[in-house]
Length: 171
Image 1 (spheres, rainbow, N blue to C red):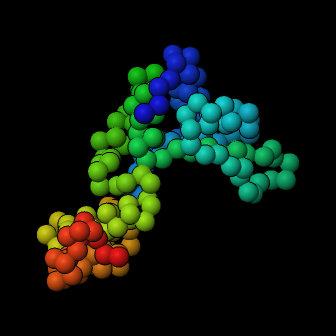
Image 2: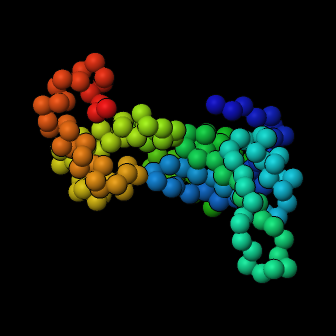
């Protein structure tokens, strides 16, 4: 977890309250900001982490370049909680809504190969126990319907029993 000085918290809260956005994408919290001041975006990244890039297109030729910064997953949730008390009421309500719907145990922020397997297992397990339709669970876990179905079948197969040493995950 990142620790911020009082100055950094104030700077982050001010910038993100005015220029930022808070949303959920594929079940993960995301904080972002876009502006034409690259130096401010660089400072934002140096304090909060995350990534930034230059927007690849301009709406009009005479417009300035736009820079986009974003942070997602557990790091975004931690940042939201750190700045929450310094935000406007509208932003506080949005942060509360996002955090309330975020289950960090079901959605792994790294989305590595192992994380995808883990997510597939959760989705397949929930599908097998009737906790939702194929479509609902695919959306909830941020995976395809085929992935949910494959892990559902795998969990019902005899192969599941023979993989105790691998955590039950398919290779």
